[in-house]
Length: 327
Image (tube, rainbow, N blue to C red; front, side):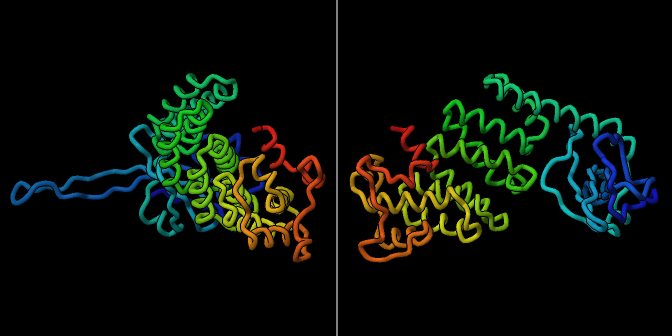
């Protein structure tokens, strides 16, 4: 097979302007190309049995010195599915470069798909949901697991309050590990916020819980879980995750504000009624007070409520502002 000389050092040059396969002829470039594998399968039985060769295409992208991400190329010449990692030895032993197929079929198909999704994004940003839906659907006809297109379509449904289709997209995203990767963090956050604002609180909890399973501890993720449980009127889990956020990041203002809200509502039946929240269990309120910066016990535990019903220290709370906007 062709000698694929692999990039083994840091390449500080920009790759954004490069087109076509890279890394095959220049060891200073990370590898990016289409490869193929061939397998033989037996068809028929007895004297009519014969062997057929089956060729599969793979999109290979170098991730590290000895780590190469491999994704299957579908009949539309687009890489699809989860990426698996192979070593340099496995790549050179089992895969064959397909430079022409990469340059004439796969790269143009990938570029066309990217442009389709970008059109969908622009339509959504302009408040044109039907046009956005059309572009995202067109993209998914080419790659049904494309994370960007699925997120885009889901946000279109959420923004137009289509809960049935929103839930369908939500279930699809839960099954895609790539949806929770750092690469899609912005889309992940936007979708999660829209779930909560659409009053799909159970889905928001499942969504952020799934992310917590797949990613390292993150204070913002824990806070988002705390907010989702807050909307479900689950004080115990809400404060639990607010505390986790504050343990990771003691200066997390939003998590601290949520703890202050719990303390304030625990000390005022008036506020509970005003904002339609259930009573805060005493033990939960005590824990919230500790992490809200109030460490005294007994009757002095709770924040003093001003005559207007909101302590001045809560006036700038983003959560309090949202509650006031809902009234």
